[in-house]
Image 1 (cartoon, rainbow, N blue to C red):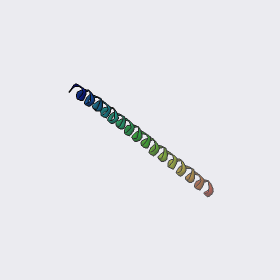
Image 2 (spheres, helix red, strand yellow; image 1 turned 45 degrees about the vertical axis):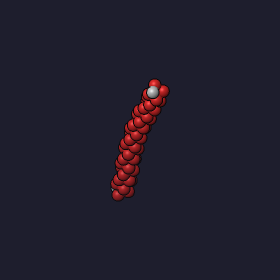
Image 3 (cartoon, rainbow, N blue to C red; image 1 turned 135 degrees about the vertical axis):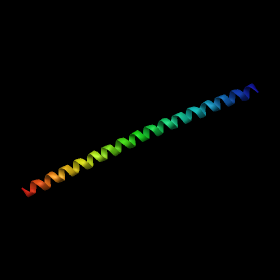
Image 4 (cartoon, helix red, strand yellow; image 1 turned 180 degrees about the horizontal axis):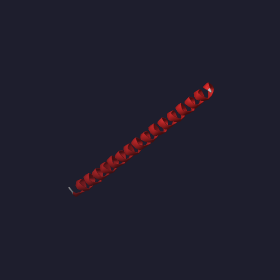
Amino acid sequence: MTVLAMLLLIIGTVLVLIGAMLILVGTVLIVIGAMLIFMGIALIALAIFLLIRRALRRRQ
């Protein structure tokens, strides 16, 4: 019975650690995804700014 209890304790600990790692990885992936979205928005804004500036320069 003691061996079974120790085995269950080890398995439970491993499962908790794996769950914590998955949550951590998920959080990191969410943060990376948000950073990529903001970088994409910044690049789109920069491209639009450059296109508008070029279009206004041609008209003058």
